[in-house]
Length: 461
Ligand SMILES: *Cc1c(COP(=O)(O)O)cnc(C)c1O
Image (cartoon, rainbow, N blue to C red):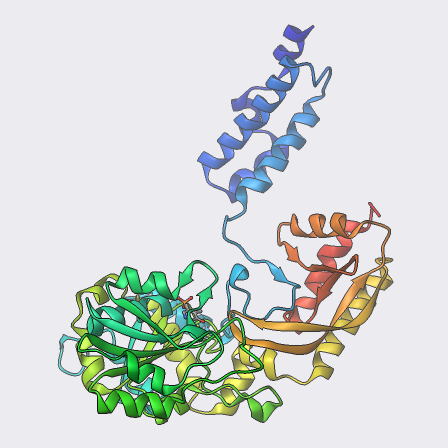
């Protein structure tokens, strides 16, 4: 019986030419195509041997292979729909780039370019030169340097200016950011000695001053990105830290984390000190991320005093955390948008989502709600609150709208099925209802999102 079934299994070379599979063969590479066929046959062979399949038709094998082919043809890193509402979602790739970046991006990546070539002199150039002036113009800094990410920026500064020396940080600022960035451990890694001063809730400038020894090199401030100390609190002002650093011949550095270039309070969001303001206060060096509130790609940006930036450019560690042409080309587009703040707020998705009028989000929610209801995917529009995310603006919840599913399936079931689509939809479960938040879903994606939800649920509600 088993032997008969095994003999009935189609052969690989037969299936490779099978009409039903032909179109897949054209779409993916031969290796993946034949591997998938083999895998499908193996599945049936094993199932026959362990008695979980007692009969089958050729078409069953074809269907199984199609399923495997579909899975194998998907990229591991691929597009997902962010229905969580969290704007800078680290697990979902942080900030989105403006769509109109595409042409310049293709130009730079599919052609040669002047990454380290000075076109005017015909000699070797520096990759940092494409961005430095632009960033200085926007932030008011004397110098700027770009590295792989903000964590690398912090390590570079510590290593250059405080190796085997002391760095003073307030106990209220010993942060841990997601993905194992912890200030005490970063200090150890950079080869510097952390000196904690003050208490969790109160640190005065006198605490910094008392801790200074002949071994002190840096007074450092760290943005408490993902928490806020409230109540009976005090922190030393930047101006005080800067004055003390100057008087004692030390360097002052601030790890600003997210780093915002636009005063968001103009748009009704709680005031966050901008990079420009931190520099104006006299802090020597400021580091921030490229893909948080800036709205660009992964990068670390260090801005500040000219002589200090020049020293960083000669540090050996820089070679290991330098950025490539892709990062530089993206950041040039992004920073250019900041030359006109209105342009930045309109075109950079992260800023657009944070500042847009709530009626736009409501419209998007109503639009998708209608499309789904028309197709019997019952739902209703609800008011929601979302996080900016990415360790930016902690405690600041933004108003938003979403849709709540009212179909006859458990929220966990809905969540799982939408997460397993070819283009996964990641939502959230709240009060035992599955919700897709519309804060982070573009107008032009709505029909597509509705379509994939409808085709997933239409037969199987
Ligand atoms: C996010 C963050 C970092 C790490 O930045 P990456 O660009 O992710 O390396 C460091 N410090 C602070 C305060 C942050 O908020």
